[in-house]
Each structure stands twice: as C-alpha cells, then as structure tokens.
Amino acid sequence: MAMAFRMSTLGMSVSEECKNMFMELKKKKVHRFIVFKIDERSKLVMVDQVGDSAASYEELTASLPDDDCRYAVFDFDFVTVDNCRKSKIFFIAWSPSASKIRAKFLYATSKQGLRRVLDGVHYELQATDPTEMGIEVIRDRAK
Image 1 (tube, rainbow, N blue to C red):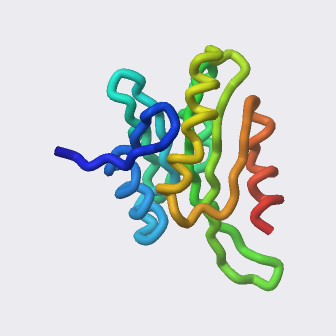
Image 2: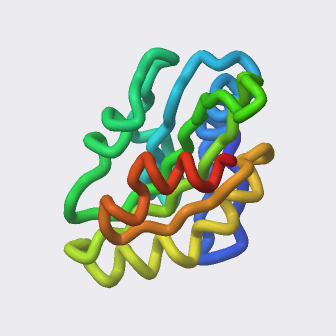
C-alpha cells in the first residue's frame, strides 16, 4: 500500500509519489516540472503530469487546464550577472478564473499541506491568469 502524508485541512493526503517525484526533481534533476492535482474521491493530492529534464516552461504552462486548479513545481535554471549557473524551484498555485468555486476553495485550503511535504521550494506564485506566472515573472523573482 502506498504511503500518503496527511494534510490537516479537509482530510487531504499527499501521495508518496508526489514526494518521490519532487525529490527526483530537486536532487537528481530528472524532471523540469511536476503538475499536481487533487482527487476528491480518494482525498489525495497526486501527480498529474511530469516534464522531463529537457522540458520548457512553456510546456508547463501549456499543461495547466484553463478551467481547473492545479499545483505545479518548476525547476528554473539561470545564469547570474556574475556568470554563475543557478537553479531555483518555484511552487505555483494555479487557480484560473474559469475554475469552479469548489475547486478554488479545495486547492486554497489544501496548499499548505502540500507545501510542507515539498521541502526545498524557493519561491511561491499564485496565479489566476497566465500573465501572473509568465517567464518574466519567474526570471524577476529568481534574481
């Protein structure tokens, strides 16, 4: 039986797969991004989609639904002004305007439980529109 991490709010749990995939992204650089979704029936936050190490930020944004909420993590690589290669992990809470109110509530109240499991996130973004999480926003935050 897969182990799950209990989240205090609404009895949601985070699947073991979420934590394992995040560790692979963080330590082994196997993934560029991970998209998570809540399965209401099982009351579990689970992995929805994964982008391999060569995936782009555009692939992440294209994988997010226009009418439903998701969580995502993205490993952003960049070069500093003094020519150092760096990597920062972003947590994105995606809650588009077209999503149902119940989904917005469920994702908003479950977010902190997932964030506690994803140890090593550098920055967090909340977005209701693609412009709020554009690559320019990511670049500005990572400086």
